[in-house]
Image 1: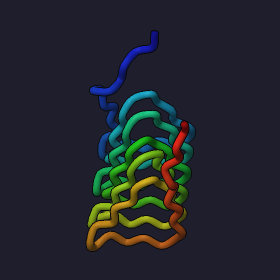
Image 2 (image 1 turned 45 degrees about the horizontal axis):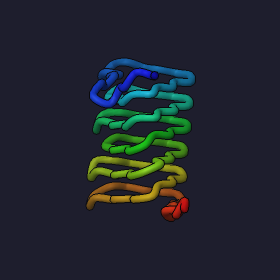
Image 3 (image 1 turned 180 degrees about the vertical axis):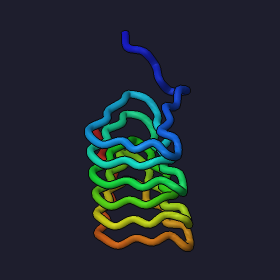
Image 4 (image 1 turned 120 degrees about the horizontal axis):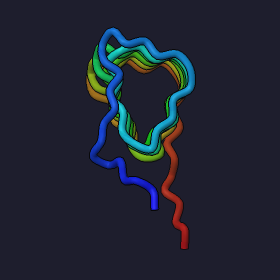
Length: 115
C-alpha cells in the first residue's frame, strides 16, 4: 500500500527558481519561481510573490501570484485578489476573488455521474 502524503507540504521558498518537470503525490506550496510542467495529485498553493510559467495540474489550487500558462484543477481553483493569471484554466469549481486578474479562457468541468 502506498504512503499517504495528505498532511505533508513541500515548499519552494522565495528566492528558489525551479525549471523542468516536477511531479508529486503530496501537497506543494510555491513562493519562488517555477518554469515548466507541474503535476500534483495533492493540493497546490501559489503564494502572492510566486511566479509560474508553463503547465500546472493539481487537485485543488489556490493562486495568489503570477501564472502564465495552463492551469487544471481536478476539483477547485481559487484566484485570490493578488493573483495575475494569463492563460487557459480548467476546474470543476472556479472562484475568482475581487481584484484578481485573469486573461484567457476558462472551462468548468461538469460532475460526471459514474453509476
